[in-house]
Amino acid sequence: MNPSPPSPLFLQGGHEMGQRIRDFEWASHPLGPPHQWPPALQMALSLCLNSSFPTAIYWGPELHLFYNDAWSVIPAERHPWALGRPARDVWSDIWSVVGPQLAHVIATGEGIAQFEQMLPMERGGVVRETWWNYSFTALRNADNSIGGVFNQGNEITHLVLARRQRQEELARLRGWFRQAPAPIALLRGPTHVFEIANDAYMALVGGRDLLGKSVKEALPEADEQGFVALLDKVYRTGRPYLAASSSIRLQRAPDQPREERVLDFIYQPVVDPVGRVDGIFVLVTDVTDRARAETALRLSNWQLAEERARLSATVEAEQRAQAALRRFNETLEAHVNLRTAQLERTVAEQVSIADRLRATFETSLLYQGFLDTNGTLLDANTTSLKSIQAKLSDVVGRPFWETPWFTSTPGLPEFTRQAVAMALGGQPVRRQLEANLPIGTRRFDYSLRPVYNERGEVIGVVPEAVDITDR
Image 1 (cartoon, one colour):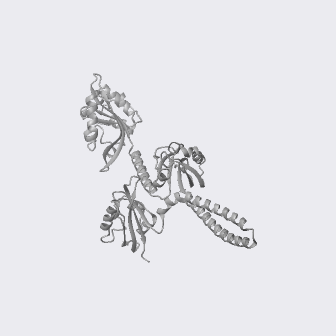
Image 2: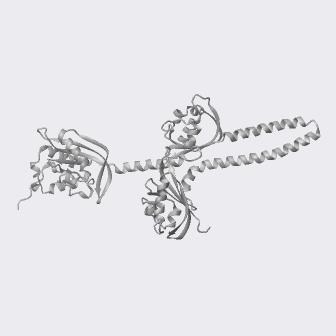
Image 3: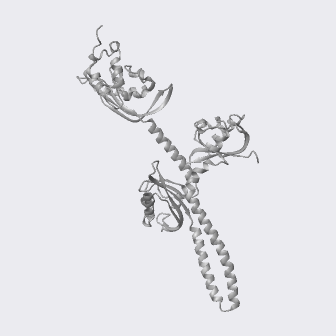
């Protein structure tokens, strides 16, 4: 028996794909045995096999496919069947996109680079949205004719989807923050750039254009009065800053003098997953009216003291003044104590409001969730999940009316589907209903309310229910 001829030098190396190419029956293939291949293909294939970057080669009129180990994950279950196959057969699902691109490179010799290209690729028998950065470069023969295409690239689907998820989450948070009654803002980076500012905050500063600008740029008077320096300290140290009855002069309308306001506020540092400060959460309470009332009370107290001195000319007048003053002082002390308690509660509420925004969703008294604009369930709290003896992963991503809260009760899925449509149209829905759940038949005060973004657009729906069975 004659030993097999040694593999050509240009096919050496390449690990698994190098071995597959060396073992392939090229004699019966349209490209013929490797020693007959054009020098351009031999050189490109040697480079491909020994590259650690995902690399493929399409060669000949039918664009037969070669690729290295790093590229072998791209065709998924089509590997290793794809080796030596025409490109049109391998990529029939995305040929409408890559076919014209390859044809352009073959016809003109001009390379193509694609960034964040969406390819509807079939994987596991299902067409999936995939995203890619890749390039096509012409491979030329010795006579300068184009013999094939050199392809390098990598998949970025996880990056695109992660960015999309963060943008959707940010839009949802902006919708929640926008409707908060207290002025709220979120600043990012060491220059404190406005990323979020709700309607109440915008009203406080006169409706100025804030988003995307630093505090120093958007509110120069705040910098002049030392508030940017406070932000710098919070960002640098990671310690929150609380202020009560802090005076600031704000220009609340163009071409108007600055107006003095008295504010309680919190600068709360926001940390990234590795514990570094990357922003500051700002919560403000405008207490100008309260401060003016307290000033008036102090002035009134001074005036009463003057009256007491004036009436001290006679014992009888002195006694009357002292009695009146004692009564007033008692009232004033009670009022001051009340005001002090209110101030303490306000400061405590401001410190914990960020936690309450997150903790509210996990109340044990309320069934609550969040739906996107298609009526798909994106989130549900622990109380509602316990009622159907399910985990979040069992129901998330499903149309709300097809979840176990409704499917065991005749007529309830259709009612819920219609109610979701009404809420997505901007109309809140509320009624009492009875539902058959794994924990038994329960009666609920049930509502669906729309959630809006800063442009007034509905970005989702919050379903809420209170169990009133035992009432």
